[in-house]
Amino acid sequence: MSSLRVALFPTCVNDAVHPATAIATVTVLERLGVEVDFPFEQTCCGQPQYNTGYRRETEPLLRRMAKAFDGYDHVVAPSGSCVAMVRDNYPRLGSRAAAEGRADDLADQARSLADRVHEFSEFLVDVLGVTDVGAYFPHTVTYHPSCHGLRVLGLGDRPRRLLEAVEGLELVELPGADECCGFGGTFAVKNPHVSAAMGADKIRNAEATGARVLCGADNSCLMHLDGMLRRRGSDLRPLHLAEILASTRTEPLR
Image 1 (cartoon, rainbow, N blue to C red):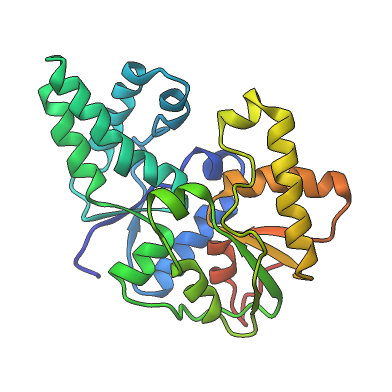
Image 2: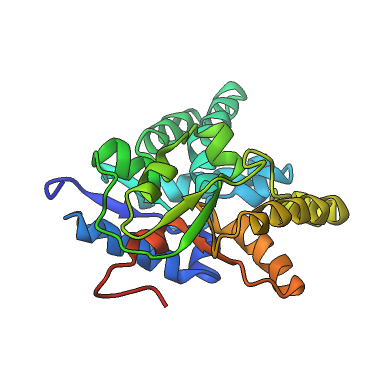
């Protein structure tokens, strides 16, 4: 991997609200011998605009992202949601722009970037070929698969395999794991009561496992659930997969 150029795409939520996750991602990759760059030209991938119906307004962000990550062999992001935006929706934007005769080059830019972007767990398992990253986390954990990772990217058991290889970690099954937590980006804003009800179901199931930590691979979902857990006064702690994998015996996660 030392000869390959790898870039970090931390995403807006991690950059602004959960920087520890981005740091943990780099920590794990560097532990495995991967040199990671951070292109400062990157911005939001445009998912909020795209999901709200502002498709054409998302195109400049696609161009900026494609330019920022041009020349990298792999782009790694600790968010299935944002990776799904790049891999699934960028090509749609490019194809539509070409079909409308506005920007023939946008489709090429979209495809080029989409082919090189990986969600964190699939990069570890599929590209690096590892599940044991040398982590130590002596706690009981239950795992919530987010919708984009589960349904769009098809991450399958990759996150679970990584967790199962962590020394000291006890992984317990989450009832109704494949059910949405209710966040859904703008869905939570437009449908707050439904969103809160779905989140309450997810939290009840997670608390019933007796786990100390609720793990996920998308901090947008974990942020939604964390707010509800705090209001309940729950002892259950949401934590991103990367932060668990970054924890070791010499540097335990606090």
